[in-house]
Image 1 (tube, helix red, strand yellow):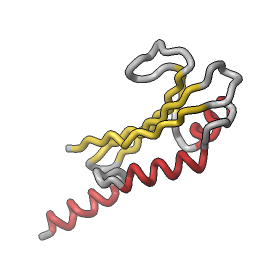
Image 2 (spheres, rainbow, N blue to C red):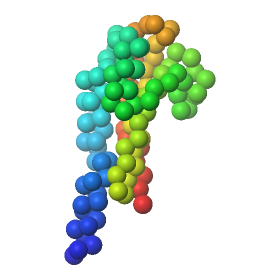
Image 3 (spheres, rainbow, N blue to C red):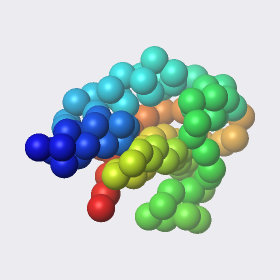
Length: 109
């Protein structure tokens, strides 16, 4: 019984679950911070203030000009998650569009 309690506490403290609501919470957080039409520099500032690291290119295509990816890691006692947001901007001083929030990618022991 003690093992189950410890496991439950570790799960709750992990900060990331496979529950689809974690994607909903991430989407809501991103939607409150950035939106289509916002300047790229402002989108970077907003997301970086929430712990994201942003760069041009994507994980799948690092050389892709005009596409930007912001990622952050969240970890707990037994889980680690990566949050990923991708959007486009034709030039570095332009407004962003096509904001996409991917479901958290989580793994654990």
